[in-house]
Image (tube, rainbow, N blue to C red; front, side, top):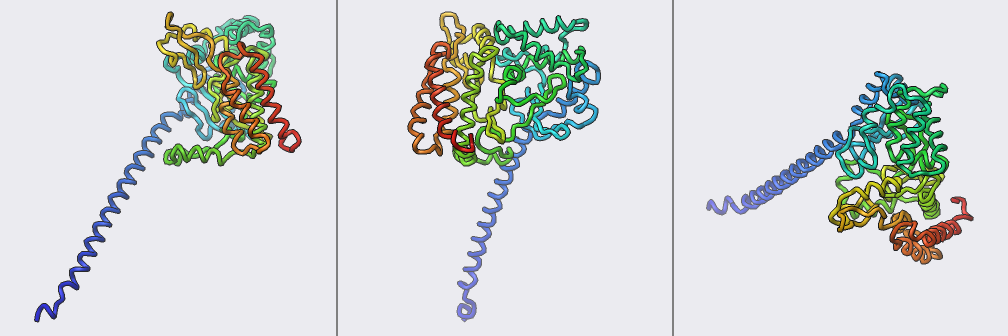
Length: 427
């Protein structure tokens, strides 16, 4: 009778469903908690790295402290330290030693670069000695302008070799040194300029100031300097906030980089600009330079699709590169690598690096341009373009050893690209 009145099976099923629901609920809560924990940890680690990497406040305080003590001076000092019209904005820094920020200077947009404390001793540090720049102790008190000019010429000679027209380059340096244009060079102004001359990027900007490939120098204070902003960088791809970047797989990131590129005629014009840069730094007006990081992040372009060098720290004078390599101890070829792309061989009899790079600038530039120019290339030019690019990538040895072949391939590539866009508005 009781069994008939109370069908227990009726109650058992809901209890089972409740247990199942409770289990799913707990499982959902556990994985939600795990996702929040892992996500928070990643955000914490990335934010900690960001705060350690981006130290613009320290950089500004250090520079302004020296300016107020009368150690350094420059066209940007008053705006940075007194008027607060030079503002450090978004952090673009990738290495703690060199602080990089987007910023504004009155109505101008620029990129602000500031050098921090001396880096640990390594090959890159030998390329750009920091002791003098950090101390701001040269030239010494009582140095005449003529003596300072002699210091500049000797420094440039050590950097780029004994060029016939170093006096012209020294004159350019002195014109920049007189930051307030009062016709006199003060000791703080001279010390700031001397600090800047230690930097490869600043030196390259001087050497290529008549060309369109380097952003213009807007001003400086000590070894902090302001360059004009390049609207589009890197060369292709899209810049994302770091908190989004950490969640994107590498394969998807490469695909996204290809999505965010200019039209092919614009890419062709930018590519011609990179080839012209290779020409400018090889046996240029003030000697040869080696491009030791030919990657998309090192370059950008403006509204007219003219190529601009965004990061020239690894475009180094060949003379000082070779001298440094001769002194570099090695056991394998990999010990003779500078930057990303400048590799020489190891002489095992002496355990010293040889001075000649294994690949010329042009081969590295063509490798960077391969996917950039072939993807989306018009069908009537793609096959010939691919053939020439691979012939270019195959170049080995220094450019001096193959100067004729080097020039022929470079000119053929420029001609092929230019012929395809010369009749369009993109040219």
